[in-house]
Amino acid sequence: MEVTFSDIQSKLRELGIKSTIPRVVIYQHLLKFNRHPSAEEIHVSIQKKYPGVSLATVYKTLDLLVQNHLASKVVTDEDKVRYDARTESHIHLYCEKTKKIMDYEDDVLEQLIRNYIEKKGIPNFDLTGIQLNLKGQSKTLKKQQ
Amino acid sequence: MEVTFSDIQSKLRELGIKSTIPRVVIYQHLLKFNRHPSAEEIHVSIQKKYPGVSLATVYKTLDLLVQNHLASKVVTDEDKVRYDARTESHIHLYCEKTKKIMDYEDDVLEQLIRNYIEKKGIPNFDLTGIQLNLKGQSKTLKKQQ
DNA sequence: TCCTAAATAAGAATAATTATTATTTAAAAT
DNA sequence: ATTTTAAATAATAATTATTCTTATTTAGGA
Image (tube, rainbow over all chains, first blue to last red; front, top):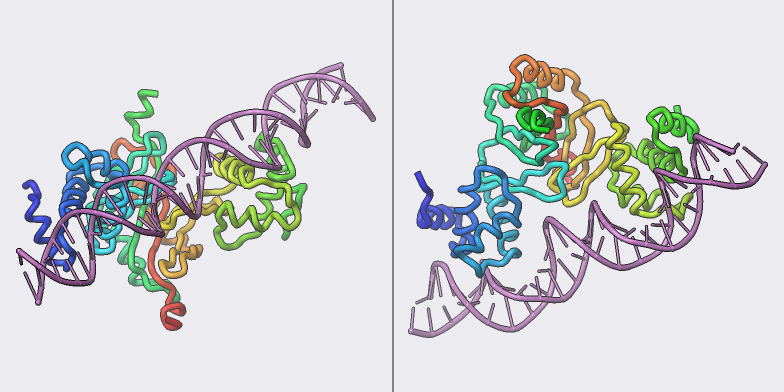
């Protein structure tokens, strides 16, 4: 099930993106994170095996991936942007205590929103994306504190 | 209908917040904006009448208002945070071209989401807030370009 | 293998936000 | 009405995330 180096090479070339080692490595690491890493976190996690890759390249590559719909930005009340390799849209649960973002799978809710908006339409607005963030606290955490 | 200086003084004191001139002025200006200003924009708009108020105070006061539920943070893909004096939750339309945030009034949709989540419940998560951002482009703008 | 445009490394620059500290102020106590 | 005192503020330095600059390197086509 692991996505290999050459899998990613092919994918990038399909999209007309030049395949470079930094790009493949960054995308590979983003895919491996099941949380939602910041650029900094990806940079750190890459250092071990690829010490040469600079933080600026991480930022540029992540933006490139977003532009090509291989990843998306996740914004919260936090001060830094996080990235997500999941391209299918999904709901984010944001825990205000731990600042962690969890994916929440609920196709029914998502379709509910999408259908409603499509049926009703929003005047003077072409919808391109729905972003639903549910803020709160994870219960297990609350017990601990 | 204008919210007066002393209206705001009372409101702050009700909440046990010390009423100071910078605080009243900042909140008053936030209420007057119908867009969603950044801390910087509020600071600039205050300079005319109250040149002494520092940007740091604007930041601190806005955070205070958020903590006391008199305002809320609005985050988008943009790099800076915006503030909103509307406390009732509502939907934001975010135009990717102009970077403008518009309020979108749709109590039915909001109730739809809220009901669905309440009925179903999310395992291990206490929901405190729903934040729905609809990304897209305003149609009138598209014609112009 | 060579060529060239594009990508990268390294670090400087920028922009938003937060921290520091000496001074000022709101409001409670006198 | 004064005095007192903890909290708030101004001014600005510091920090943090992100972007920019430029000399060097590299991918992939000729």
